[in-house]
Image (cartoon, helix red, strand yellow):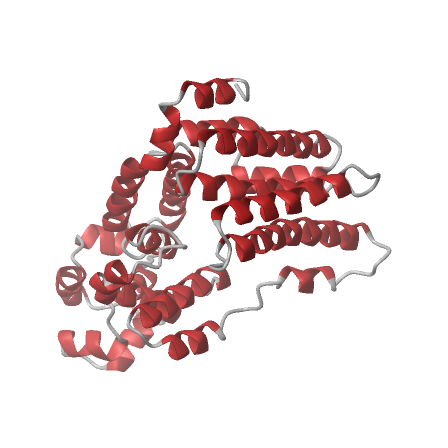
Length: 355
């Protein structure tokens, strides 16, 4: 049986935030010896096993017998459960799960990434107090990922967190400089360009990118208005709703049906704004109804559009996005959503949608 001890030493060393030189110093051996272990050129002497296990806080059996395939399958299961709990609005259970996973798999980069974002309230979390309170732990995690992980998406997450920490500390320019190291956000376009324009592969990536950009662009357009300090709440409602109606009009035309993606995204931004601003219940109900209608159009379009169906499944982990949204609104622990659920008219509206 092949020993994985060299791989384990590297993983555990990085999880501890140690360099090869620092580990060698703790063991009073040469840095070259540690390097050879990790490169699988040699195995550590048996007398080194207990000191190594003690440094890493694991058993000798764990040090010797790490089953990568079994661990990966378990991590896959944990990540899937973590996402499901988020969809269900069970955030306390989700946090408990990822904290336990972090202790069980301190060396797993996917667990590290989920854990660090959970720590700060998600990727949109920009609370400076929370970020700075956890700065040392988050920095160690980011450094570990950037030093040892080869997956671009996880490295990008670490870069993003590093930028947030810098911004929270008041060094915005340094944060912007760090973010400049990220791969282009439109990287999927590169895949599109690999293929000749008369191929199925090109058509797939072209449509996939179009749908993704439609969703992102629509959200950002709506947020331009939402966060405009010169507009009143009534003006924001008017402008964003008007924008969504224009998208709906475009989506009613042949071969432009996919504009319902943007329509849904804009109504989602507006509905969230109304909810968070404690707007009149009738406004919230009207906009949520329009969002549900747009979602139904997306689902109908996806019946004959495999790319849109794939995107919906990837984003929402279900094909029934109406039921997903209804479940989310019924389970959100935020007080603004709880307030809405106390209104009979709102609940009557929700009960008309989904299963």
